[in-house]
Image (cartoon, rainbow, N blue to C red):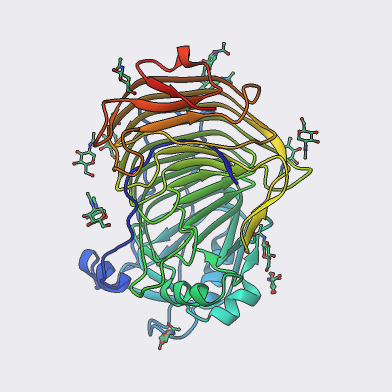
Amino acid sequence: MLKTLILGLLQATGTFATWSAYEEYMQSHSMKAHSHESNRPSLVYSPHRPYKKMHDSPRRHKKCVVKSHNDFKTDDSSYVLHAVEKCNDGGHVVFPEGTTYVIGTALDLTGLKHIDIDIQGYVQFSNDTDYWQANAFNQTFQNATTFFQLGGTDVNVYGGGMLDGNGQAWYDLYAKDIYILRPILFGVTGIRQGSVSDLVFRYSPQYYNWVADSESVTFDNIDISGGSQSNNPAKNTDGWDTYRSTNIVIQNSMINNGDDCVSFKPNSTEVVVQNLHCNGSHGISVGSLGQYAGETDIVENVFVANITMENASDGARIKVWPGAPAALSGDLQGGGGAGRVNNITYDGIKNLTLCNQFPSNLTISNIKMTNFHGSTSDKYSPYSGYVVCSSPTVCKNITLDGVNVVSPAGATNMFKCGNVDTALLHNINCTSVT
Ligand SMILES: *[C@@H]1O[C@H](CO)[C@@H](O)[C@H](O)[C@H]1NC(C)=O
Ligand SMILES: *[C@@H]1O[C@H](CO)[C@@H](O)[C@H](O)[C@H]1NC(C)=O
Ligand SMILES: *[C@@H]1O[C@H](CO)[C@@H](O)[C@H](O)[C@H]1NC(C)=O
Ligand SMILES: *[C@@H]1O[C@H](CO)[C@@H](O)[C@H](O)[C@H]1NC(C)=O
Ligand SMILES: *[C@@H]1O[C@H](CO)[C@@H](O)[C@H](O)[C@H]1NC(C)=O
Ligand SMILES: *[C@@H]1O[C@H](CO)[C@@H](O)[C@H](O)[C@H]1NC(C)=O
Ligand SMILES: *[C@@H]1O[C@H](CO)[C@@H](O)[C@H](O)[C@H]1NC(C)=O
Ligand SMILES: *[C@@H]1O[C@H](CO)[C@@H](O)[C@H](O)[C@H]1NC(C)=O
Ligand SMILES: *[C@@H]1O[C@H](CO)[C@@H](O)[C@H](O)[C@H]1NC(C)=O
Ligand SMILES: *[C@@H]1O[C@H](CO)[C@@H](O)[C@H](O)[C@H]1NC(C)=O
Ligand SMILES: *[C@@H]1O[C@H](CO)[C@@H](O)[C@H](O)[C@H]1NC(C)=O
Ligand SMILES: *[C@@H]1O[C@H](CO)[C@@H](O)[C@H](O)[C@H]1NC(C)=O
């Protein structure tokens, strides 16, 4: 019984390339190891600038090369910790191209400052699911855990290398037990001023990126892909989840997954998401909010622009829990919280449409969805979308403009509409439902 104001319904998918991540890495990287530093990428913000200006990092003055056993089995974590400690406060840590690393220990990489982490090599997290369940870092939201946690001031991560979450063991284990704690591949837990760019992420056990308690962080040119090679699907593999964070930019990236491309969790404000190609995803979602009774969840000032959705089940969704507790599944239950979703703009989504909802204590206001083009699957034919709010007092100022979405058996822009001001739904042919 999620209350949702959903846009977008295309066929969901779930098949992925079958090469192993390391073979893929070898195809595009030199195996002749060297320890040159990469140049820090200079980030360009277009078409939209961040809500607040991002700071430039000063030059780094020392270099620390991360050693490796380079044998695909011995844990290299202590080498990583050593290099990061040595180069903290003004240094440049290099994982050389062509070198392989195994991470078998949860790494606390918080308390960093003025550091560049240059990952050119191939980094694989071990598949010791018992170890990680006991030792991965517990985040407070939705039982999320992370392989490592990265936090500090003025932290940049880049280099063109690959992080491989070794997800298959987790996909298979989760099929047997939904209560296992699957680590998130890239855990940002408190960065002020930083960037994560030019990296390849493969086979995360669950979300690819967790961005919590952070401010002024840019993600640029991240290549995400992964999926299960058994019959057990790779579940909850969101591209990014933002939480208690502000002034975040996510841009210029390719995401091949089977869940939300980007999801704005509670207290995500001033977020720009642009120039993404999302393939096989559940779209770009606000929420789910209001999961915890007594909490106030805010998602405000979000700008989403120029997103290509390929084979997505949904396009742009706003999901909030009902005003009273409910259970979606054993490991996902909640409801009863309060809050607001305000000033959200989706501009330029290709291949998209709209959906539905139920009651909640959150308000949804000042939502603008413009320039949606494409066609839907026949799932909800002849309708190509829904804008249905549970109650007229909950949703305010929801505008649709420049929508041109056709469903196979219907005309263009046939929508189900309810409890919203249809005068703001430009060129939408509404069938009233309440
Ligand atoms: C969509 O997914 C299906 C499998 O579910 C696949 O056969 C098809 O090639 C995909 N379409 C595109 C455009 O990627
Ligand atoms: C999208 O995913 C499908 C498989 O679901 C794949 O065939 C297709 O090549 C992907 N598209 C791109 C642009 O990678
Ligand atoms: C995280 O929580 C789980 C389950 O509550 C527990 O088993 C695990 O030891 C905790 N991890 C840490 C590092 O405390
Ligand atoms: C967290 O996991 C416990 C069991 O380990 C489960 O009862 C609870 O519903 C989960 N919470 C969420 C928010 O998923
Ligand atoms: C874990 O990886 C090792 C090789 O490092 C492999 O032999 C083993 O089968 C894997 N276990 C699982 C459950 O995938
Ligand atoms: C979100 O922000 C509201 C308002 O500042 C606050 O009451 C709430 O505790 C915050 N929630 C979390 C999870 O930090
Ligand atoms: C829109 O995003 C695509 C990548 O998905 C990019 O190639 C294109 O340049 C972007 N368009 C604009 C106007 O920024
Ligand atoms: C709403 O968001 C837009 C950008 O999406 C921003 O320019 C504007 O300042 C925000 N409005 C308020 C009242 O903060
Ligand atoms: C939800 O709203 C109703 C009516 O506005 C109120 O009585 C109830 O206490 C609210 N619940 C929560 C958890 O805020
Ligand atoms: C409606 O929302 C848009 C942003 O989506 C905002 O620019 C506009 O000022 C709002 N109008 C009213 C009457 O609040
Ligand atoms: C919509 O997707 C189909 C295939 O998935 C593609 O052929 C078509 O070009 C897309 N339309 C737009 C407007 O992107
Ligand atoms: C709106 O849709 C109805 C069918 O539900 C159709 O009869 C009508 O002609 C459509 N109006 C416009 C303006 O497209």
